[in-house]
Image (tube, rainbow, N blue to C red):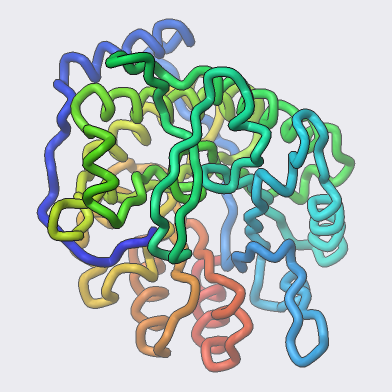
Length: 371
């Protein structure tokens, strides 16, 4: 999540009738039956270190292997799509191979994830029907390019099926590589990724510039296409990885208002996660709602925050993740206390916090109680 400023929560723009129609049609095509039951695939437990370094972290000239840390049960890694598939159909799994071996060697687990959004390779935008969209990324302090959930032809907008077809091939290749791997039992879970804007990891519409955002004309049609796009992304992972726990991260951030404050909406994420939980029954899969916002909310506001209430309301196993770096020991204590109290199945902390010796005792004590 890229935004801490708050604003009142907004209702859905798309009518409930139109939304239910989109969902019902998709579920009917997939063969959903309300009598279906959820899968019992085990989900991860304990403490996971999060990194985007492929577990290659140097401290004082020496490498720190996150899998070797005694209070770490596994490592969650984010790798850019542009690094995995620099050329269409040509995949580089070297970091995956090294990391899964390191996980197995240490009797730990690996979550290896391909992040998309503004990490898509350049060749994607040369494909017919896939248009690039540039926006200002406040976190990176520069303009970045991503794809939209829709394509435009004159005044008409339609689902970006061209990008979805490309993403389908990429995830199919990832799934084949994973399923054919002799160490596949070392995989903890895979995050459902592929969303537009930001890193494609969270259900979010990242924006900080109102003038820029307003040009998208965010209305009921756009909102419906955004939801439909995420539904199709979920379908891809369900089809190819039903036997692996699938993480689905969500937020309440969808655009920005004229005062530069994030537009908040809880119903968009609720709708998409609810859909994923229904579809998981068709495929006998397991979906784990994830909140990567644990470190982005004031610790004193966590317990009654709408996002915390939402993640608990799904009544399934869920996981929480801290921010890039926790500034104070008391904040770490409050975060972990909340995660433990509401029974997060596992807790993810970025490698900077995992390697911070001031936090080691707190993390160890929490792990002992939740594992």
